[in-house]
Length: 119
Length: 258
Image (cartoon, rainbow over all chains, first blue to last red; front, side, top):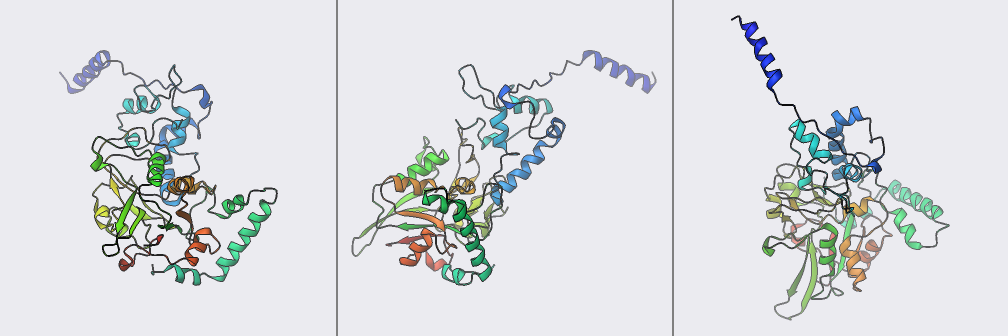
């Protein structure tokens, strides 16, 4: 069998047998409004850079404008359960965790930072 | 950076600095004419707002009158713990202490002094000098902090600090406050409640507030560079002492009665 045919067959086999990849489902609270602090396309690719920049400004220069802060992410994106209690934003299927699991990226933000808004 | 004692710093202030401060004070006074509370004027002349980078125009410090500090009172410690979500664990020997009460007795006279001890926010902090990653740093306004994003938990700073003012977080934590991130594997210490200060609303650190509401008023917080601030006036009126003054660290925290 020629190698090109073998490769083609292999891809065909993979396409038919690979399990469907579970897409992340982003549950966004209604209270968050329709628009994030930047356009969705920017947030998808650049949110970590925005967070890093804000982080350094806050820690070293005391600039605490909340636009690009992690606290602001949590304040808008943390959901509430039936009892009205905040669900940690890094909980299973919650906003941060669902996407990061899909992308295979481990977050360590919430080992130190609050994952629910201050009550 | 050259070393500067408080007295030197004050006299070395340039004329332009002084006139600029005067200008802001006048602006603040005009802005607060409709307000009756005198405290608002103080608040407005303090650090800028949350959107502005801190500068070395201010240097924040504490004045602690040990003659007003009572043995057995731990209001400041409780205030700090509550503010920063510091909870006691099953192993009290590893609990974080951002501030602690110390009782010292003169071996000859038996005179007992009680005082709160926390990060002294040195002008020349040994913790910053030894930090291998730059995580331990001094802000422009003199507050010594740990950037926990860069801290590798080596604890050199804890060994270098003559005041034992820093703690290491040994166990995983939960329920942190949004304004005071804390986590396992990093070193931490008194921040002079920098989150409150940066708001620019003139809020005092939690320990000072707790001491005041406990009726002692043994602690005064303020800007050492502002000659009209409460703390500068108290410093000028009283003989204050740096703990371990022999080390020449130029501490931002000064004591009376020790």
